Image (cartoon, rainbow, N blue to C red; front, side, top):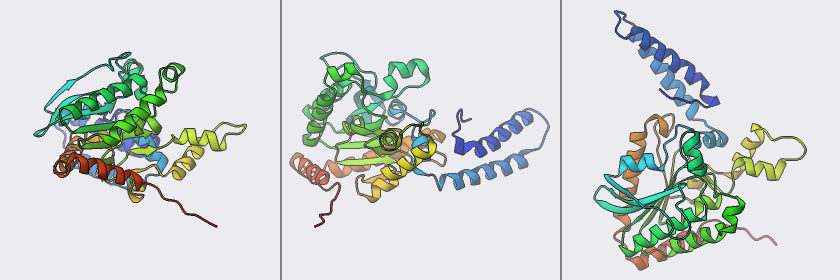
Amino acid sequence: MIKYYLDFEKPIEELELKIEELKRISDGKDMNISGEIRRLEKKARDLRTEIFSKLTPWQKTLLARHPDRPYTLDYINIISEEFVELHGDRKFSDDKAIVGGIAKIGNDTVVIIGHQKGRGTKERIKRNFGQPHPEGYRKAFRLMELAEKFKKPVITLIDTPGAYPGIGAEERGQAEAISANLMLMSRLRVPVISVVIGEGGSGGALALSVSDRLYMLEHSVYSVISPEGCAAILWRKNGDLNADDFSKASDALKLTAQDLLQFKIIDDIIPEPLGGAHRDVEQTAKNISEKILEALDELRAKTPGKLTEERYKRLKKIGSFVEES
């Protein structure tokens, strides 16, 4: 049973609660209401299909932040047969907002790195709500250097509202840590594959997404700023902002996987089960794993020089401009 429903899912919640109640009533009793349950299940499925076929960018943003949505460690535990987590940046501390280590996916040994938001108040505080400090990015830097040393592919899973903007993080070189990652990832001589699994926000996401192949889950988002931040900059005057402002900002930012595929910023969209990744974590993980292995098969045939050359060309092609006299 889903623990949390977003506002636009409330009609689905009512049906699914009724289905659960009927199942509870009929459990162990001589009652034949299976026909009614099947009818309601079909109705709920049809309603879910209708609602999710026309989600707005703001609704997709809320879905990307869904409290039940799988995080990096959830996927790692499913798609990898073995995972040895490595800790610390060897300079300051171990940032729990970024996890990483050596994993085996299929027959491939890879270095996998990702943001981790955490569930429940205690773990979210421990993970800093998925907002890394400089030491988190320096940990990622160290692991990517390790991957290059031992000629192992790098896999990154992106899910962060952004890098932590606190004074301590700035004092320890937040901008420098992010820019160092961008430079390193642009010249790594091993395959680099990135997947946006939830929320890809600002430089905090970019620091793990300079890659040979960039994919997004169907209901994930990826942008230079959050809709709330965008709305606050553009439209806050005397009054408070509301959901309409956030919705307008989401439309303008073009942050959905579908928009970014159209702009050729990402390479492909990884499908999610109907209702979102949290509805069937195993299937979502399988979809991610298949896409990663498919990309590895393609990229491992390229020489290190060819990889860096094509990565450079790929990045240069992003964006366009028009000159007017």
